[in-house]
Image (cartoon, rainbow, N blue to C red; front, top):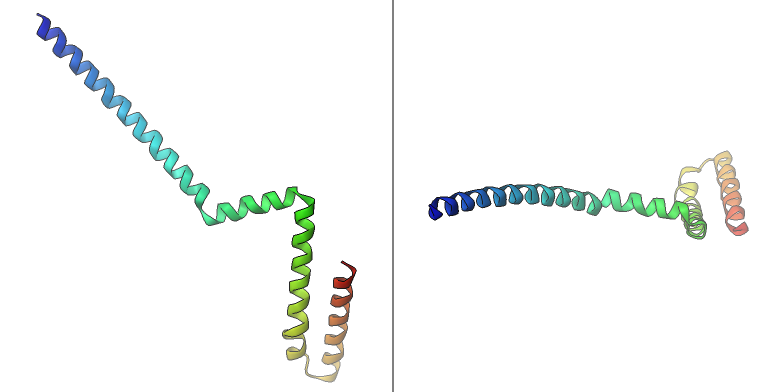
Length: 106
């Protein structure tokens, strides 16, 4: 009589542990996919940009850096290469002057 009850108890316990194992496995899979989403480069960049948007000091530094890079790019590469006709050269120098004045104000 004891063996039947013990066997039944063991079977119930095995079923209970299997159910627990399945639920833990599903939770682990969900956590793994969430971790993958957080480690996705796009998500990292997105969260960084959200942080930059909330802190004004960082926003100013990034804006100044972008203006400096843009002014360097405009001053060195395409402005003199594209504007080769006299009117276009004049326009290129005006654009360069405006960008440099904007850069110097910051």
